[in-house]
Image 1: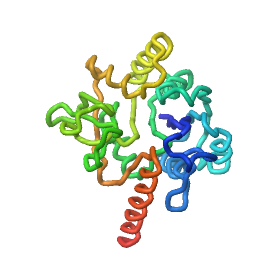
Image 2: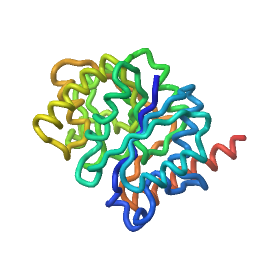
Image 3: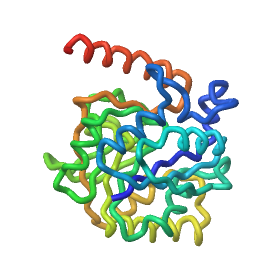
Image 4: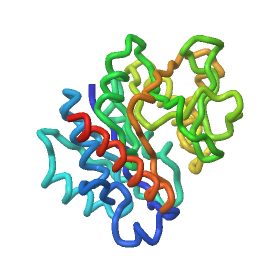
Length: 251
């Protein structure tokens, strides 16, 4: 298994906090967001990391070189990061990730090792972590499940909140076979149809519509938060500080 970290975005909605710094290097509880991601990946026993960069990529590379946590990195540049979505970044990993199982994580996500362990240990080969207790809004990537099962039938921001089982929190486990199918959809949409501005969940939904199975695992036991705006960042700081205080109290 390899880890794929999507860290190319310009984070324009997070400005002015990201005027001179990529979002993944903003600190929470005294450490950059990216640091806890790399620590978690290393703790999960994964050693090889593909990192897609773009905005302020030299800052990210310099940070990673000084904080590698025993990981081996390959950097891939999304040169058109300012006008494209994460689907282009993910598609750029194809030459290096095809044929391998991947752990896919967004670089603006704060999550805890427990959520990752639960995802990686799940018996399903293709699975997305969700939080059934998340506050859902139009910006959340939501999932609808097939009845009482864990199989996903719809996934994306447009999903009906009233029918949603929770928010996809930004960590996923995909088999090589699933990624082969996903890369084919991404290639058609990006290369042939020139759809560059839609997030990769649209391609995932296309696979769902064609009956390709994908499952959800609820990781609501651990807080996780993806940060798109200064308000998200402020909320994340408070949420994580409160959770860390609880952990210290339990110790």
